[in-house]
Image (cartoon, rainbow, N blue to C red; front, side, top):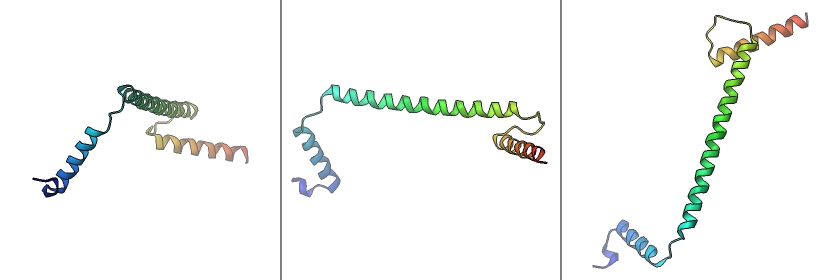
Length: 96
């Protein structure tokens, strides 16, 4: 049976196997270097995202502490609305 009579997907598989058998494999150290580099980049991205979330959380906490106490729900959207209203009120009081 020749490879031309095999289904197309099987022909591709046979071609890939032949290519792998003929072509040399990359050295192990280059594979581990690539893995280490990817892992380092992944960890840096995770740390960067954690810092970004921490800064946002701290910013919301500072805004909440700055605004007058309220019995309103303290979601981020309502906190930003209260901050906006507070700034508008202060602006109007200064310019009246």
